[in-house]
Length: 198
Image (cartoon, rainbow, N blue to C red; front, side, top):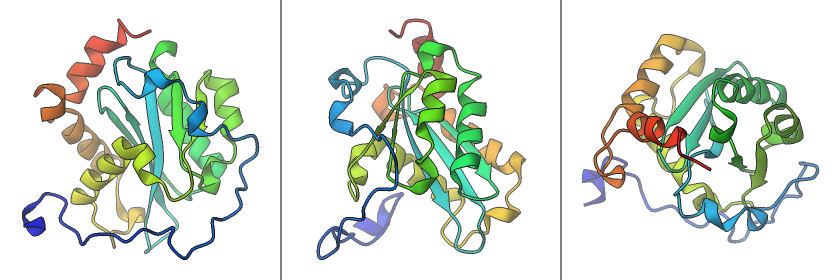
């Protein structure tokens, strides 16, 4: 049955079993436990999750940002998955949003997020970090990354992906009606929410 699903893959084992939790290299990280409980209910627009998609064929990567309420996704190509390039991508995309549309950002513990404090200073966004090997704590982003992989499967060389292709994928996902949104599109929900979020 699992092969019939849009995201068909074998059941993954728990990566934390028999594995040491690596020591974080991210200074002054704020754990997800400190994130406001109101973020969980998805009632307010402006709470995001961030991640990176990597390519085994090259050092190029993709930065993905997903808004929790609307499921709006922003995809940016990175020449390298570094903290500086990641910050440039996030700042470039978030600066185009109103301040109340970028309240929190939940990240994983990858070193590309080591300079999160710069994001807080420049954007006013509060950054929180999920527990190591707890991808479900950023489930919205993980699910969206799976949808992106439908178009850019593992083994894709991200060096060869053009900005036009990325924009096309981003537009497809943001204009696709979603059952969880009452069959509205992420763009429709974001547009209606942006003016009313607190």
